[in-house]
Length: 182
Image (cartoon, rainbow, N blue to C red):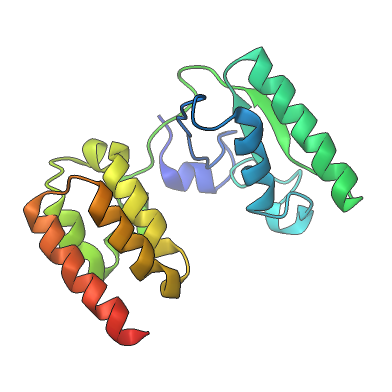
């Protein structure tokens, strides 16, 4: 398994990526591809270091041939829409393709000083649990989004999820801070 510094040097052939596990009864792969293309500029060769290295690039790794087909269709649709070359690469993923980054790269927003109590309150005993926690993932997404919407999303999150008591108390404090600052 390569270290993050080795990957960042661009000499390993690895790419920094997010592995998405989804329920196709709730969202289609094509919808995920659309979200992917809307979430970044897949034409920005300079930012992506196109051709220079592989660690930072626009890439979709698919598991099945059907997913590969949907990803390629989405790329063509995006390219036609923006009328510029989309540099996203679409590659078959193997089951051993993904490695966890070191702990300090996981759930960035939950590791900020004012949110550490929330992370600790989730009672995740190791970095593997932290990286794989759906609660931590959702909370990280809430805190990584627009600050003015975070309070509303946090209330909804707290109402529909079972949260350990210690984390709930920490979230209530964060919620109060968010409400006072807006």
